[in-house]
Image (cartoon, rainbow over all chains, first blue to last red; front, side, top):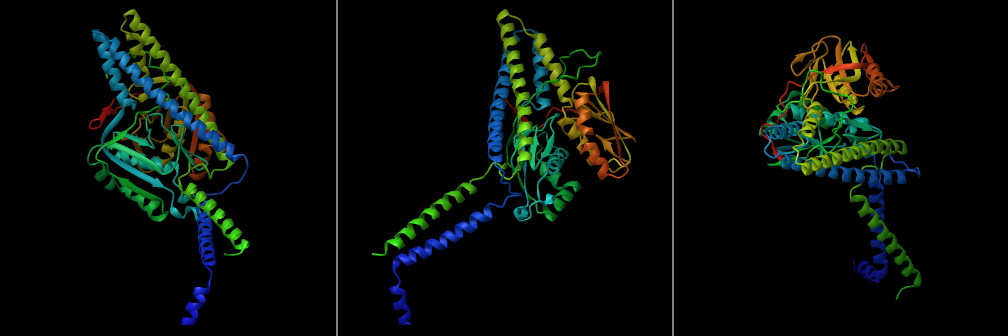
Length: 254
Length: 224
């Protein structure tokens, strides 16, 4: 025993330091290799500028959305300011407020429910297995289930779901209102206090959870914040082809 | 002290170690979700983002004009009732509160039509720019959901007859092209649902009714 101890003492400290550093190096290389196994790995040279372009366009999109919300808010204030004492203008303003509320152009706050969806954790080891990925159809199913549970407003990663909303898959990405949304996908809803009870009691929701979370391993989490804000729709409300029927006269009634 | 070789070895190991620590920290910092996309997927994404940004720029310009018009009316001492009325008509049609007419497409589905097929079709029509949609004569709004099994489908508690007719107002040529292109929705649905037939016809004038739903929130409060 004393021989072993003496031998240990005879090892220079720099060798021990080097040994520990090499162990750390090995650990970090292994960690790095494991963390770089995404769904599929591509190495073509054109990807870097494309990612940069996409991120730039996304930033522009956010800025344009902020401008739209700001302009809508200023228009609403200006309309109220110009109404004066005119009864027709007052009626029209009230009707417009209601119409914007119904259309999803106003942010809503209330009892909340948030459903979060993420790819199955084993997706990195099983690239190409579509069942392990969250798809547009999964997100649409969650949105539908929340409507059925009584939701009054729904948003996916803060993109408000309105009459014109499409949720589509584009090569493994999700576009909501044509805006790119990155995982994890958070579907937020405001509505009545029993929304979660309604959701949990829905047979189609139970089937969805059993199939996608239970069998395929997609990660699904639910939160019930006491108060939640679902943002206003920040996209285009322009119509080019739809017109009111000839008999329909513009009305101030909501 | 130790040999010069051992010092160099330690320095090299420390350098590599530092590089790896930084790389690891950066990779754990959360990506954009775009790193694992192919060049083809990214190209498609960029094209979509460009289209969307053009629409948003158009909306910003429209809103700017609207604000200017209200300011001008204010300066003249007018009530800008005409502007308010036009805005009201547009928002009510867009949201589904009012009926609409215009060009578009009529889609007729025969055979084993499922709720999922209808949901996919409505989603694709919206993506192709539909401004108003009706399924079986029922206006589609955000919470409109088809349910039931083939043969006894319903929308908003309204039973759907066979064949099921879906009407969408918008650019008829664009919507027809999107639905019927090779590998598009019609081809996909007909390939995966045996016996299903989908017919898409552009039309110059279609009518879509107003929703019967009350879209006003009852419990959620507006945040202005």
